[in-house]
Image (cartoon, rainbow, N blue to C red; front, side, top):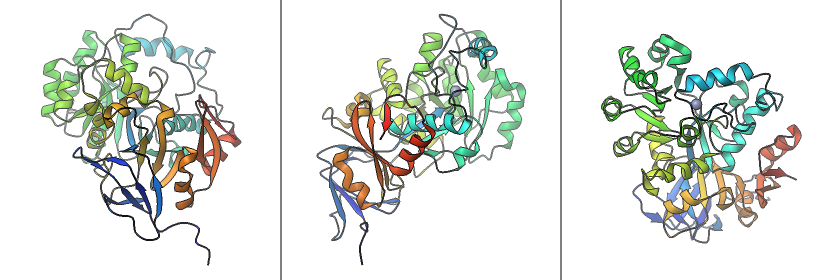
Length: 395
Ligand SMILES: [Zn+2]
């Protein structure tokens, strides 16, 4: 009888970044889960040599709007004082301004797929999409999409109805809202309003927090709530960003790319924008896209490499001796493989045996000019729907 794929896959000569900061040399995957670290391969395992590459948990993007990634970022003033002014500028143009071509690609499914590809190609395996979980996101999709959360847009869009949304969200799920997105008094007073409405609780997650003062940070942290930091979006709109150090110290911080309406590019670009502010070390930045995000999003099995955890991996070429410097310095071309649930999705051709071992058919692709293999179901969808994610082609 022909054996099409192996019982397990073991990566060897790896540098596997474990939660306690130790580096393991091997990582064994069985089915969709991590089976062991620093274990010898079993007889019959497929073995893939990683040549000293760093293996990170699949990155978590804690904030995006997946359907808004097909257009360049746009603004109509040099600098805003509050996100509400930016909204007022772009909403009347939404369907009429050719630069705001959010209606292309034509369908919602195509648009969310472009957002999915943006995330996947930047090493993201889980994304928190801040909008309804549209039907295409419930079907087979390039990345894992968080589904167990409640959300409101913001106080300036939803008003005091945010209180009902918070109340209706189970306390074990995160409740997520844009807050303090600006520099003016209105932005500064939002936390107080949210507090008065009973919306500052242990499951509250605030996005942006540009106007948070040290007392606001203390209030959020004391409540057990947290912050999603989107520095490139903030810099673009306000020429300023949040002071996040207290949130990192309390391990209540995650990073989000936001959509390309205001965010720079993808989560790797966001790590670089965050690094430029010199608020966190590279290790602290790595936490914001792994364990920090998993904490805020209440996904205890995500963001770490441990036996029993889902085999979601982002494998990074060693750009420096430090794994975290390598991650923060990485571009999409430095990602050697992205794997979700034990199945490779995109990888260098040199890692083709991992696709073979896990029974994943492939197509040839290019990412920023570099040859890649992509799982066939993704490649075929991209080809058939003629999806255009910048720098990504399938053949
Ligand atoms: Zn947003």
